[in-house]
Structures are given as C-alpha cells and as structure tokens.
Image (cartoon, rainbow, N blue to C red; front, side):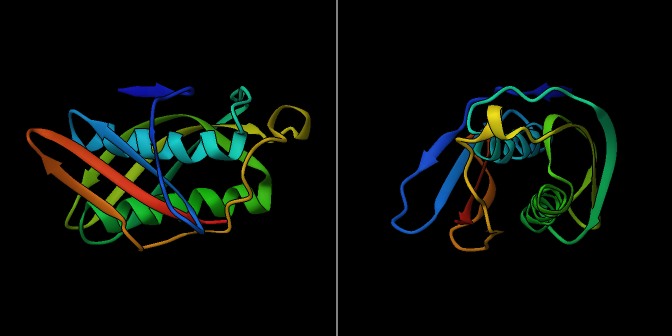
Length: 144
C-alpha cells in the first residue's frame, strides 16, 4: 500500500520538542504514516510534488529501531539534499533484521514549505511502536 501526503497524525504535547503519533491497521501502514508525519512537519503543510523515487533500507532489531533508523535517514536526506518524502510504501519490514521503503521524494521549496519546522534530530525519548487492541501505534519526538 502506497500512502501519500497529506496524512493524518496526532500532535504530541511536549515543552521543548515536537512529537507525532500515528496509527495503522498493520505495522507497515503505521511506519508509512510515521514517515509522512515527519514529512508534513518539514513541509509545513505545503504540497510536495514527487520528482524521483528512491529505495531506502535500514538494519536493526524491532519495529521501533527500524522506524527511527528510517526517519533519521530521511532527515539526513532533507538536511543534505533538501528533499521531502511525499509518498511512502513499505516494501519489507522484518522486525528482527531490516526495513525497506520506497519513497517518492520532492524538492524543498522555501516559498511552499517556509512554515515547516526545523527538525534537528529523531530521538528515542518517548518513542513507541506497538500493537494496541489490534491496531499499530507509533510515536516519536523530534528535537527542534
């Protein structure tokens, strides 16, 4: 399943950082929504037009470690290449080894995305990725 911006996410109240929480019917859906929640914060509500698609893979152990690894890789790409994820499809999610996503990336435009947040880092603080009542919930805080 490929998801695209805009996507619903919940803002988490925090005094010094910004946080998001998402839900999905599967861990793959929750991961894709988490990727797009980060993108929405970076884009500030502005539309992001896909210019190219890339595959990104990370290794780790557990849904949470894999999710944080992917978010950190996407934040690195934003910081160095000024690109934002506009679409996300989870191609593989093995919580004991690795995750791979296909992302449609678009160029950051200061006129369209100037209201976006200046995210500095993806943190472990209060991060969660778990099944609750048959739904998957993921949340993360970002340093700003």
